[in-house]
Length: 287
Image (tube, helix red, strand yellow):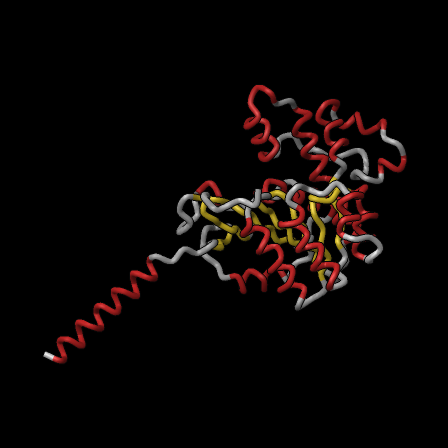
């Protein structure tokens, strides 16, 4: 009887343990491009072998932002890194540098640079990590007003820029492939309001971010770049422009996606990136 009670106790304990395990809610699951689950440490090991890491985020997703910081810390602890982001426009590089050099305060940076509304919660940790560890931080994006010009008047509108203003965009003329699936998909999603110039404005951002990376690329440093996931999904966007410059460049891409069930990667997300951060679609947003 005692043996039976012991056996029953073990069975109940195992059932309780399984129940607890089944109720776990992981914050994210990491996949490779083929939809196979992969460990964080294995991903970092791969990233450290690259020249450039293109980290595609969902702008209001806290898991994206947390992993951006962790990857910077873990890669930065093993080799020299350089950081850059879509969230800073090239004409704001000077105030960003001044903040990094302690010449202005965080309040001063807020006054002098066009910071995104979620800067304090989502991007300040990255900038401050770079500042505290003497890591360079590059403002890579084109000034928004220039993208608006292209959206209305095509690449030709950039010819009216002055000499200084032209230093804030990729070298003219801008290479462009209108048949890339990403740009085609963008226009399709916009429906009747879409014009070919809208895709060109997106391409201008991609080209300028790639140009900014190339300007600062150093073989001794790993350049980690942060941007909306759509800027590098399916190895297009920024990566397409980098590969135009040097086809052999070692680049790893990360994409962030959301699903109702994260236990397996949906077919639509396969091959979006080399590593895919999958989060539940009801994840609380930062804004």
